[in-house]
Image 1 (cartoon, rainbow over the protein chains, first blue to last red):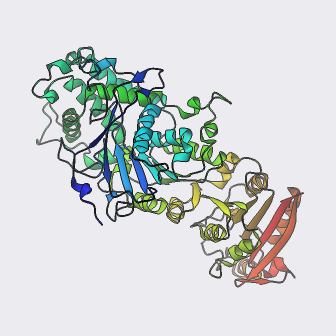
Image 2 (image 1 turned 135 degrees about the vertical axis):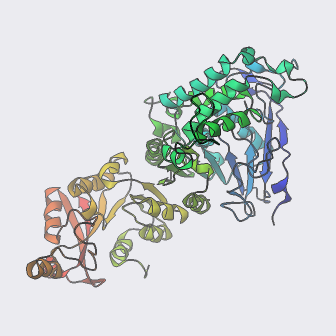
Image 3 (image 1 turned 180 degrees about the horizontal axis):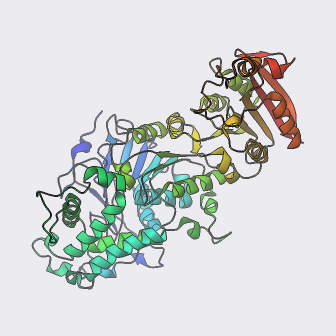
Length: 379
Length: 196
């Protein structure tokens, strides 16, 4: 039966009774976790799939986004009869901690009632997963049928596999990596510096002025630049060329000035500005930092040779599948292949496939029929 | 199992149920599916992404990769049986691939089209052309088969690598045929190898 939950946009919120202990040694309190569910949990509670969202995603997976009114970010994939079939599965998507869509983040109120801002502790991918584990516990689910995630969501799935290997039956990791490369970190640093260089950032304390409309304050220009830079890394050269080439925007000739003469410029400006309507700049700082710190082999090297990724998957029995895209230069195929060989060496049943798609890193969010087939078949 | 390709059927019949198996060049997973149905823990390696996607959607565990470069990632003795079916002739270094195969597993099955079959010989001898046959259907310039091998050549290679030929099967028209003059009469061969 198609669930009416598929059209409602209001998130559930879990308020954790306990503080969340973090990798940094600090703890976070109070903690709220916003989440959405689709489909129905069966009586045995064994049909749940947790979908982990990417850097700028949120829990609005398959229902319209409350701020933008746009369709959910994976509405193409999650729903009745779709590859992640909500007629069969109970699909959960929670907002990561550090974010600004209902889960505790730098814009949330600390115990003194004022926004955390930069008092928010630095978090890691594993800390995000700790919050997800708490949510799954809260929902009374011992073992998830599957975990699914792309990009940063894939890092969360890998962290589950390394730290909570008994809590799920299958894991699907799309366009992701077990560590952030120097190049990945470099691009994130450009974004963070753009935000912090904006005079409106004010050391992160820009919330106090947000009396009437919180979206209209803060380092909007810096955040837009950060988004523009990041957006380029999500696309492929081929994709950009096919979409825009060197075509001019609404004009016949170059203006010999600095307006957005080219279509690609105007597209990026639009992407940057529309992002500021829905995303908090400090959240962007914290979440990119969590991704930069991510290095699964390092996390699990303490008892053996450092950097041996196979040791991270020592306890894994669940089925795992990794998918990369041939035009993704942000998280290239070599990273997925490296993970696949590590999981294989650890003895867990693993599959890996590089799919061909023109859209670069964003391919996992876009229409790639081969991906749909892999998702549906694997689950 | 009746619908399996003949060389795969031979292999499937001789893999003990419950074995850990690596199928190198597993294609769309036909053999693996049969082995899984017999309780084997079967894993695959396959170079063609579309085939890997098909395997994954059948619920099989397959890594996309190249036998020439990727077998080194598999630990020693990580499976009981390693299989190379109709893949040998497409590899850059068949000798190194077979060495890897019998490093990963104590026992291996290798199947390949026999380039010494009389029809192949006749095509070269009388026609003067590279043969295009049922088992070697591509023309010389677009074939993935870059190292043609005969049954006698393969036996010699196994000997040089210090491997024991435990059993062998010769196929003609899809049926197992006698080993008499196999190098001339068989279209296809399957070898069961073990480390000495």
